[in-house]
Image (cartoon, rainbow, N blue to C red; front, side, top):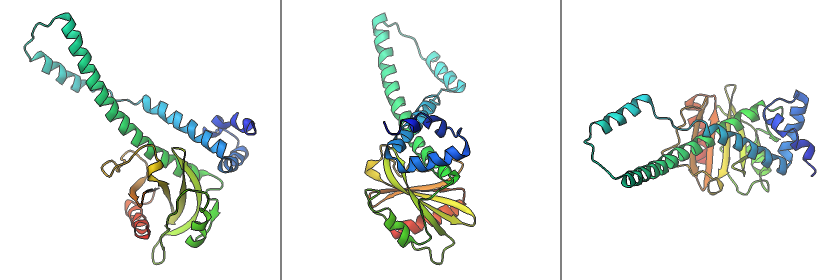
Length: 249
């Protein structure tokens, strides 16, 4: 396998434990090698799935007490042993199915937001954050043609405080997409664009306000594309850039 020497150090690279020179070399290789980029993404997703499994819902002490009080306050009726087991099994199955579906859906959506935040941080920390460097949208947009399976529009920034720094390809759920980087008052903002139908987790308009991220984020669906705008800029700046994209689309 051609990439076997790279794969041997891929986990160390993802943990950021390689020397700086090797990290830069890996950055370039992973961006240009489809096999290694998919492998890297798969490993990151596996790590996130393991982390998510360790954060499953645990009932609070007060919740347990309320349930126990509710059971104790009801009159007890004698049930045959077999009937008791049947009722218990039915309750466990129903509660387990509802809880696992609800928690799983929330975890998957939260994982998408976390992965977008990771992509934002990792790219800005890279020695080469963009593959096409230009402030001209007419240069950046054509660069993506043939590299991703969809087209999108970039907004006109004239009379705004935003400036385009460039763009690069990226992946979410092994789905290729566009990553644009903008600047506003020394704050960097990432804009991600993916095909909605290609994403494994389906986001709806009622679940798009992540509260536990260290960044401001806005996301929406338009023209069968899913947009994410994220950065440490103010919520007002994130909203303003999002509105420019919505107008351009």
